[in-house]
Length: 281
Image (cartoon, rainbow, N blue to C red; front, side):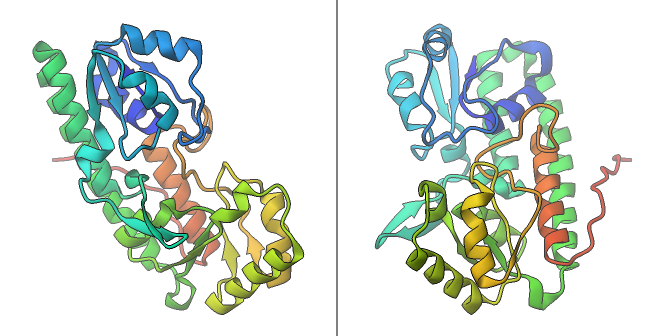
């Protein structure tokens, strides 16, 4: 079996555990939208009997190979959320694919993965159902925990500015006003003085005090803008394109959501309390 990106890979591992041989293609810390498949990726896809990918054209280069495969193909993200959020770019509405930043959406992804695994290996469906139920309970508790931590942020400080649109799902799910993103920065090697001033002016209008940079964007690109706007860049980066590398505080889905929430809450002046799973009676 094959899972294309780090989020789907991790959720699949947590449901299936040791019952399958899973190949994960896009490494943690990589940007799926620009990821270039390797010859090893092609071989894994050719040998697979089930391919779990995201959908929404999130992994465009991989999809060119996947579409040619006779294996069963499941668009986990797209099936989980049929009506994704959109943002406007150059006058056009663009689908935002990072649905997992809402734990309720991640629960829907669990359901799709569980169903796909159970069809592929029916005699293990009991294990998959049990693990999915356990994870659903954990994600539901985490959802409520995130809401409580965001609620601890002073109302006037609840404004999220990042370097990516991905957090619109998080912002909507947890009632955190998403004022603007600085995505254009990450595709630029060096900002012009005019661009710096325009971005700084936007930041001043929004009256934000902190900018959150994602792991695929260089803080050095954002620094001139932050200095001009007289705001700070939060020290820890957000995991937006997927999970963190093994050993990082974002190496699993749960750790990634915890780490992002901690950064946002602490960066905006709220009270962070570590998530603790309550056992069912």
